[in-house]
Amino acid sequence: MKRVILGLVLVLCLGWISLGFAQTDEAKKALLKGLELKARQTLKSQEWTIYLFPLEVSKKEKPTMETDILTFTDMKVKSQNLSAKGYGESNYSLHMQDDGTAVWETMQVNENEDLVFLRGDLKGNQMTGVISMQPKKGARRDYSFSTTMPTITIPATTEEKPKAKRR
Image (cartoon, rainbow, N blue to C red; front, top):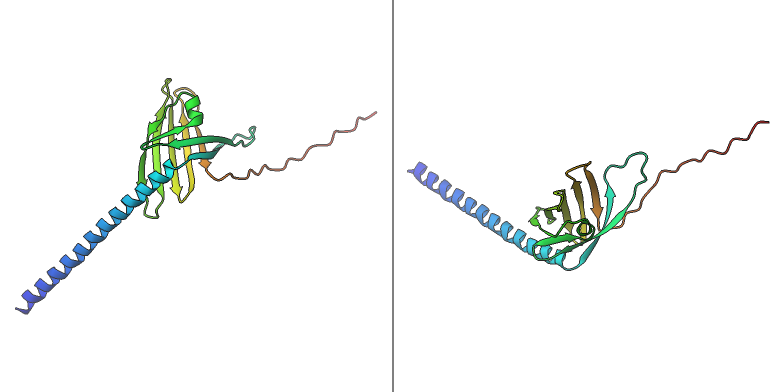
């Protein structure tokens, strides 16, 4: 009899614990949904000036910075620079990470069937991300971007003094 009662108490306790986890999961889902709505509002609240840098630079190239403007509407994102190259606005997906970072992703294609993949992380009012341009012909170019203007450090080069002519 004691075993039956003990077993019943154990089953009830495990049931309450699992019910508590279910409520915790539901609360977490509700919290993430609220954070997602807030992230969508933040994305739509302004035009985002981003600063782009190539991820790979050959030794012959100087590191360059480009600027672009991203505009988000209800479920679409548009890049000013990419629009000028024939890419239209596209739907984006948005999901939340456990730390509250909103991650958005999209893919765009132009009339030449060149692809561009965009991915951004929004935390607070700061955004960072990657743009990967994958033309049908030619080499892939990847860029990192940020809404914070970074400082560029260029390694110092030493100039050789002109050699004196011998007479």
